[in-house]
Length: 174
Image (cartoon, rainbow, N blue to C red; front, side, top):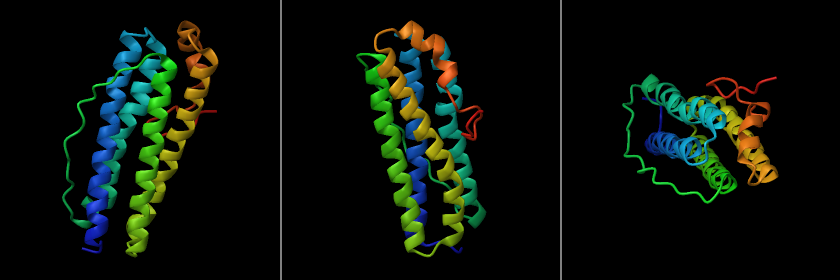
């Protein structure tokens, strides 16, 4: 094993954060689709954001743990009990969660770097690029929710035009 215990612990905790984000997003898209009747935005967010977190957790586990003969750990996820006053409130809360996730991710990267776990840093940097795309997308979604305010029908109708994530790997569309 060529990975410090501190880095292993941090990566395992980060795995839990990925699945927590997946749970928050799954709960959120349920509210978006059912309560706010935003079918297009709910579908796109579910496929390209909520599922991305779970899928990327698998990448993290494989590249940063399993490849070093370390068994991943899957902590419990939050209940996903969410409540939103508006689509704007929803997107502001989820942007805050997304930025918080990004900060936690960068803290794990710093731990790996501080412990000279260079092989882990290299893999985390690859994933971090996609995390940054998620943040950029969320900033745009929140900004559009603010622009559309209570016109959620128009927000949902126009959503595909400002949704830039076009694949599960978080690559921006053109």
